[in-house]
Length: 373
Image 1 (cartoon, rainbow, N blue to C red):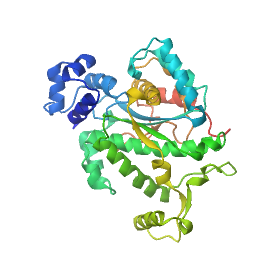
Image 2 (tube, rainbow, N blue to C red):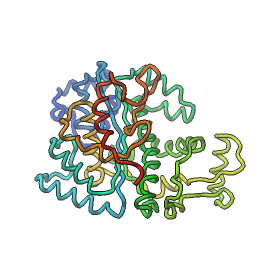
Image 3 (tube, rainbow, N blue to C red):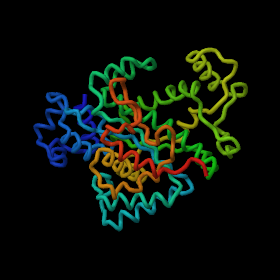
Image 4 (cartoon, helix red, strand yellow):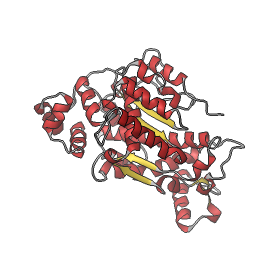
């Protein structure tokens, strides 16, 4: 239930219920009722205030009233050769604003400051990927039904509260998008960057939570099973020489890799041979959960995630997100990857005229860069 999520996020920040109530402009009894489950769902205004102080991209729960509530998962891809300079420039920008606190939250920035961060990132070869879902287009019953329909890893999924299930699902889709977009984009521009992938994930607690453990154990088998039927797309003639270390051939694989291939064969059916990308190596070679208080990169992603969250929910002025789309790479059929969990919800892709975010999405996507140089 959402109360467990709110309490976990609050305790991760070391706040009391009084602290959270004061920051979110709610009463302590209201916060207490949410955490104990006495109140099942917060109102939309309360939900937005809680999201602002607890989790900048939204808390992935169905709002009490059927209004727009778009939640996002955002990935920021930074070439390792540019990462140090990107973070240095971000630190300088923070200093110019007179920000003395260790942790900078995107919700605390005004429109001009968000625009400044976007302009900073546009000086570098960075990519932003966004997966979004409008929770107001779903019901708790619809989300629960979707969870029940999952064929793979059903017991693990079912153990999650609905909001954490939705959050983990969008995260998995985001990682897949990031791998595909990143490899296609950089093989044509900075192929040496494909020699290694360093994943830094925003930790939601002082220790690795059960949700984060699930995320790391579920993402690999889900992506591997999907990759058999929908493998990565490669660009003919592009430079994959640095990425070649992630290729594997069943005939020359080590015993552990061959055992893993046998698991895949049982999952998807008999095949003569399995050759492709070693997703285990790509995902697990360099992966860390980092506390945003101590990691500038996570803070930078938080700013961009907050910008998309606020823009898509109509709470950020256009001047702040006017150039946000230039951080994206154009994709078909939609650059911002919207998902829906049931046929009863809106179809995937929010370009439908009736959706409140449709015009904002069109304006953002119109500025996306081409995949091809």
